[in-house]
Structures are given as C-alpha cells and as structure tokens.
Image (cartoon, rainbow, N blue to C red; front, side, top):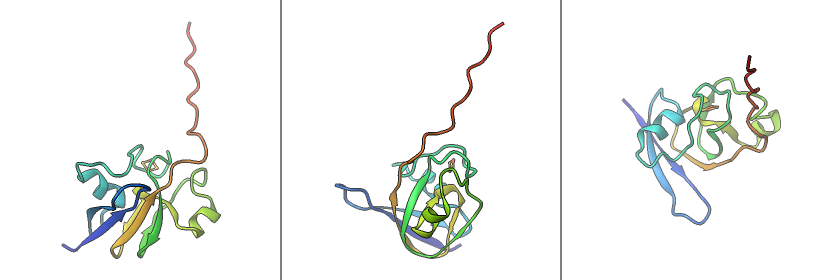
Amino acid sequence: MHSYTITLHREGQPPAAFTVQSGQSLLVGAEADPRRPVPVGCRGGGCGLCRVRILTGDYQRGRMSRTYISARDAQQGYALACRVLPLTDMDIMPAPLTVPAPAIPPKETA
Ligand code: FES
C-alpha cells in the first residue's frame, strides 16, 4: 500500500510530519500519530474542528459543511481533514474555526 507524507506547518514550531496510507483521509493519518497533530471531532465533515489549510499537494475532497468551508475558503485551500483524501505528499497548516461551533440547545427540565 502506498503512503503519503503530510507535513504540518505551525507558526513558531518546527514542521511535523505524519503518514497517511493511500485511501485514508488526512484525519485518519493524523489520528494514528501519537502527537495528534489535527483536532478530531465528528469525523464526518460536520463540526469543523479538523479545519486545515492545504498549502501544496493534490487531493480528493468529500462533502464538507459550508458553515465551516465556504466556496471562497475552498478556493483558498481550506478544507476539513476528515473529508480530504491525499493523492500526493502534502503540506498543510492548522486553520482554526472562524465561526463558532453550533450551539446545543439546553435540555428542558420537567
Ligand atoms: S472532525 Fe468534524 S468536520 Fe472533521
């Protein structure tokens, strides 16, 4: 099985690389790394926690919530790691949410 090297660039820190197997999402590869380089949430493109910016590399995109990745964001390389399948080695950087996560309504008490 082929694998890809994903290099994470964080401001003020040395680059950190992790491996993603062919056919796995960026997030699955990140979760396998003990340093947990990308935050994990729903794993399904709906919570925005795994938002990253892709600097270089080719990839396939799955469906992503427009709440967290607008059309303009997508053009600028922003993506949700759980919905990205690398096709080459890649360079990425963290891209924290710019909108708050959806609020969970309080439970009613009887
Ligand atoms: S983990 Fe929730 S959008 Fe990726």
